[in-house]
Length: 335
Image (tube, rainbow, N blue to C red; front, side, top):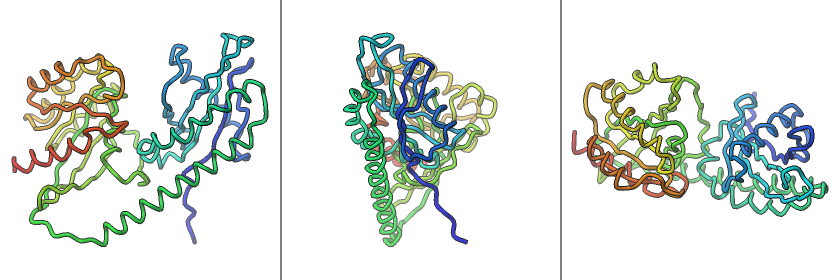
């Protein structure tokens, strides 16, 4: 019996906030479930409500676990003096199978470049014109892009599998990645773990594990990367995930001072659980956004807690590979 692989791209949907609330006005494929369309519309518009009236500059990632999907949300900027608040609230949602969430994060810049031209639909949406043709065209463009990326990745990994290299030594290291929610831990790891089309199981038990091998001279280093949930509800089980770690990454958001203030708590929790000090990095993430935490303060704190310091952008990939190359060097020297 042949097993049908799930679609990577599930659909495209445009929603507006009308007199009766969020309402789907155009979508493709046309056979998308009506209940799903309504709920996605509500959640997409709620992103705008959370922005205190300011439209997000970039695409927003919206998990939709009920429908086993992940959505990329684009907010239209539609001025209408006759509308309530002087604007029409409208969003475009691109729906992906949740198994391919790593692809969404990995290629979000390219996807944004393909989705943002849809801003031209602002006027037709305002005038209540039929935009079905444009939505179908966007779906087909994105579908072609996704399929091309997947073929390229399969080819790349087939070539790598055929090239067998002999290493003088092989090491395996467990690295824990911790920090407050929404500092970019998962995105940072997805930048490092190349295989964006891996069908990952996104667990609900508070940890996501990824594997990645790197070369250092003639040595192969196999990283076992534990992305530990930052939510308070997982605090009681986190100690179990810390055990056996060889290195630590503590991530904070340079645009959010609270996440920086909490670094000491994360460090103390990990060291108490481990019973020893282990090497690693204090990572100031999101350097692509306006800074609210001084770089000097980050470096000073890293020195106090005996960690290396680096600032990164999980969005652009800046300094992400450097962390793990340097970490490999440190860990090998400690062996």
